[in-house]
Image (cartoon, rainbow, N blue to C red; front, side, top):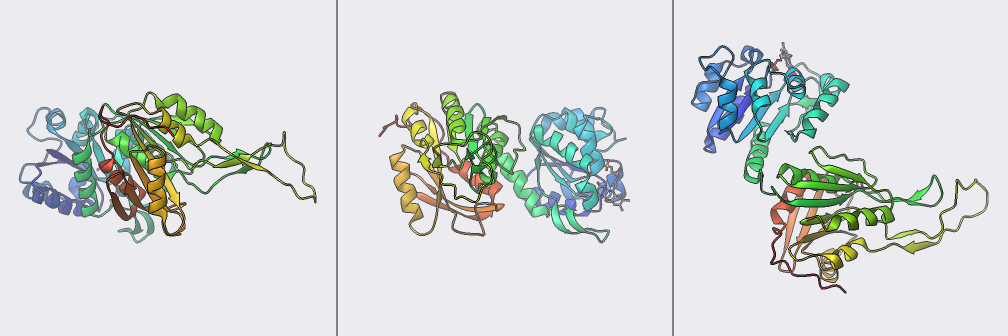
Length: 397
Ligand SMILES: Cc1cc2nc3c(=O)[nH]c(=O)nc-3n(C[C@H](O)[C@H](O)[C@H](O)COP(=O)(O)O)c2cc1C
């Protein structure tokens, strides 16, 4: 059964369509309304669309929040108002919806909707961080014009998008439960002197999305994060690594304890041979820096891989022939899968919120067409083989 929580906001009218969509997909839907939401859409409408009485404060049930929370597979709150966001973040049981959310231990998908200035408020950001740390999945809000005529981020996502997130969460919830996942993400920085470095354009978004998705699927996730503009939103253990050497050390320490390893970090292939001690003073003279190769961490991990462990690498390829080069890397480094993306394109990859992937395994290759990095991460996990004793032992090189 899916619980659909409705808060007070104009977007509540779109929740009628969400309930219809979920009912059409043959889900049992129980609508839970806050008192304020009933000023926007009445319980009769939701009762008719869901084909069962709405749970609301003052109803005949003695413990509606406890009954609802113990029988549900998922709680979807749409729209999620600023008030209910704050109440849930702080564990308040002020009404039947917030009490249900507090008593519910299953997955929560929430679609916030509010005025753009309310969405940007620091208080909202802090409340969202609290929810994210508990694994609540957010859908939207979207950019556009709001009911009051302001333009910005705050519109509730469309019902079809929310329904798709609910379906995805239902089909994958717990699919990685008991699996220990290690993900590396971000770009390394190799010092030239105390303040300057050689780096790359990785935002870390793709790797962070992979770690988030694994956590949402119930995995026990460790993320080794190099320099990144993205931050994870799902619960996980985070280790920071700045340079290729630090990332190598952390990765090799964590490898043995992982069932699945996804190496998404953009690790520098070269580092300055001699970093200048302190800050090199400015002068008119050229500064020649010799770059020496760094350790191939993916190859090292491949060589140490134990039977049953699954190893996934990323290949940032530039231009034509990328898939062939990625396949050669898959074989050379004893990987189960390599994820190829074309970094010569400006519309996807580095700095972009979207990506397009080719998932290459020994047997086949599958293109994941252009979509959000979050949706790419879901497609990746759908394709990652389960860790089993049947995984070939490392071949080494
Ligand atoms: C016309 C109108 C529209 C509103 N729209 C929103 C909204 O989109 N998002 C929001 O957080 N609050 C909105 N509010 C304010 C909430 O209705 C109010 O904060 C209420 O306490 C929410 O409580 P609830 O979350 O328990 O339903 C709106 C209020 C009015 C009068």
